[in-house]
Image 1 (tube, rainbow, N blue to C red):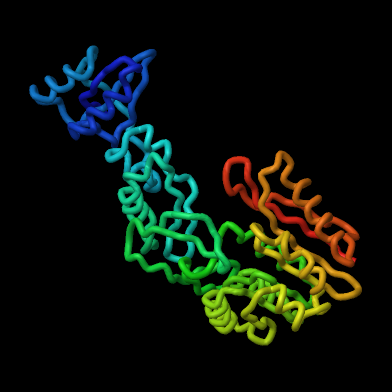
Image 2 (spheres, rainbow, N blue to C red):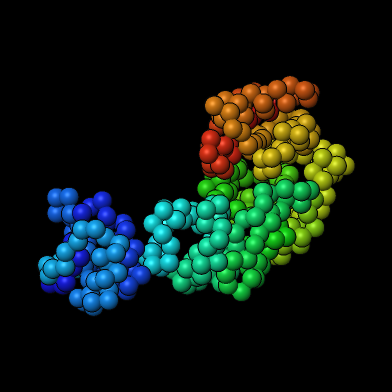
Length: 354
């Protein structure tokens, strides 16, 4: 369709688009055209004399004409669509590409350059993702004895308790009180698929139960001891065990995993899950104590920024097991679970212990 347009050299393109947005002249329903080294930017209408004056002050070379333009194909609304009139192009390039959705809560990491605009970004997320009621910005790393992260509410109701659904399981969680990551969904599924009927599993750092409950839902004859030191996590775990109807298979236990294993679970496990990547290496001896005398399997999670993260995690686990009365019969799997920062990874090592 035909429309008035602003023709500028390509080198002035970004400056021209920003100016036209400020003047509310840019017609976003039509596609911008590039012809050789010039851009033709479609306009809603012909500029008024006062607007021409402003354009002249900002752009040394331009022409106003009428051209035929293609209509933009309508697509799903994206974050950049909401914010393109509110943020400069270099800031749009810094928008978070990854948003974690836990139930109706969205979690993002705000880069430093977007810090002054984080509430604008939060409101835009609410407009794009209609089911989201709260947007949280990470304001600290996961830490402390209870493994919780600090968040800042940047949009929405501010409610951090939610209900998350994953692999046909339901999880009640409050992100300010207990750790939960939807990025581990594949690992929850993978480990559950490895379990054999009749196994006894010790989930040393169970949180609200994503490993334990999925295993219990998938298998008829399993016994799972789900341990966590965080009282809030155990409260949600107990509720999740009930709502998922696995109370006969999953036993929540409040306490430090080392002490619980020594006092209650010494030598009971066919399989041990160690999803505490920042400190799991400190608990390898306790995991070995939980494994049955005949042997079993450990799922060991670890953070590493080494050049070869998988080999590093494997070597560290082997060295830690050597300090116990156990040995590693076989490394079953090494896998990068997720990138936690540039050149930093969470990895998993599955090992058969004898």
